[in-house]
Image 1 (cartoon, chains in turn purple, yellow):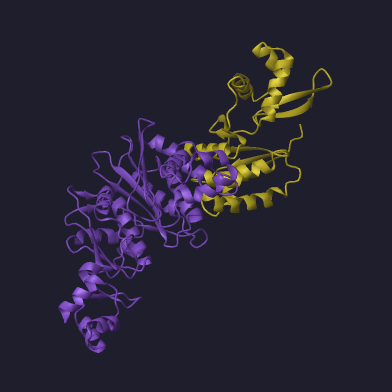
Image 2 (tube, one colour; image 1 turned 90 degrees about the vertical axis):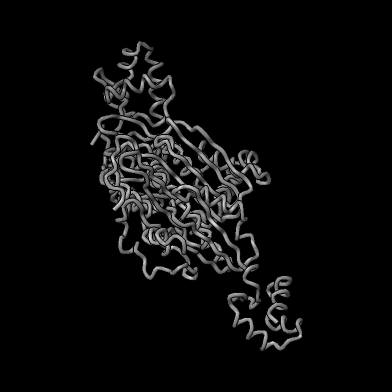
Amino acid sequence: MQKRIIQLLNKSPGLKAREIASQLELERKVVSLHLHENLEIFIQDPDTFGWSVIKSASFVLELTCGGTWLTDTHFEKALSKSGSPLDADHGHVTIKIPGERKILLCAAAKILAIANQLVAAKKKVELDFSENKAALSYLNRAGFVDRLDSTIKILPKRPSSSAAQRYNANNIGLVEFLEINAYGDNSDNVPERLKNSFIEAFGKNNSNKLFTVVSEFVANVEEHSGTVIPGFAGLQCYGSADKRAKVITVISDSGKGICETLRPAIDEHLPLLAKKFDPSLPVSDPKLILHAILKGGLSSREGGGGAGLHNSHSKAVELNATIKIRQENFSVLMEYKAGVLENKSWTLNLPKLIGTHIVFEFSLTKTQPLLKLEP
Amino acid sequence: MNEKTYIIALRDFTDEINPYGTSRGKQTYAKLLDHIEKYKDASIIGVSFSNLEGADTSFLRESLIYIIKRYSKKITFFAFDFLDEDIFENLNSAAVSGKERLTCWVGSQCRFAGLEPTAASKPLLELVISRRSTTTAKVAEELSISVQNASTRLKRLAEEGFLMRVEEAAETGGKEFIYQVVGKSA
């Protein structure tokens, strides 16, 4: 009987027990009992009550990395290799974390974002840290688990309590992921908290530059993104005290992308510019974001976050930073060196990741000593 | 000169020492408006940035710059007592974005936030800044230009928001215009 059910479900996944019994001319009770007694083989969709064979029902996003740090580039490579689980029909998704690797904030942010987006798409999600318990412990200290939807299964075991709440932003070297909600829903001043953590680690020098960049991006999430899944921001310092430490900041949301928030104001107030960035051409979207950042002038009294985006450019110039902006299906990269924009590029046709995911990274100046790095 | 000057601290109109974003900016705008409406006789308002540790461009545009725009025909504003160069830079970006100009005192230095003066106006503006206050006749003499030329250019700088123009009794009798930079450092 089992073999016949597997053959049928491989051919027609999502059938209910009654339908399976009918097609195989078996008693419904017998089929139902067999399915429930073999949950290592079969999985039931909680909404439709349809059954599938686990092998075909499960999508595995396996992250791999050759070096010490798992970065967002590794995440994107894995996504390109398997396709986005957000586009797949599978009702069950496993994200596998590689063993013996440290996880950079930019990678953790994308794992967190896609996991929560998959839950919102009514998929069962499993984060498998079985081979890297140290990474789970590290991320738990950062409040990663607090930001993760409570229905997501964590392997080998979901930590019982968040270490981030105990550390409460005194987590030098890694600040916890701070939640960003629509303006008015949360009075937390996220940019200020990140700024204070930066000051504690490195002193006041450059702290207002960082604050300016973070606050403009965070305000865009709060005021324009319309994100239903809460966004988040985080800051991580890595490297060693004897070399120039790097500061990496992420601001992530699962809302409307930047172009969607900019276009209504541009269409209304800047028709010539709207014509220049024709939304029917895929390349127009990354070009519009570059224009907003490099040229500015897209803000209006009626709305739009153009001025804030442009301000991040001037701070990136001063800090010789790198800005990466991931949108649903494309990304934009800007690299600044010696006070000028050295490289700007974009990548189209990326697998689906909803929202806006910004990484702002810079090295500390030689004159800015590291006060503390690791606890 | 009977210019009535008031001093306010922007921090008194913000909930946080590091305000940011347009929504918070609009709240501060409403508070500033409510307060400034009470100054019926104000012709100059100095805005202190003391105790404000950070503020982004969007916040400063929505709050202070749009207040300056609202009162542009009635009140001349200046800003002073910045914690660091970054806050001044953000105010400058906010003024550019809001298409306004504002005299700022950064330390003891007089600078302007917003759209820059034309290259031709700069020497004249620098001269007035160095003197703090001057007359058309003195400018004409120092720059070796005609009084009419000096008058036209000074008047334009005043209209563009870089200088204040006040009428005073001249030593020789009659009236003359005094051109001055507004405000002073903390």
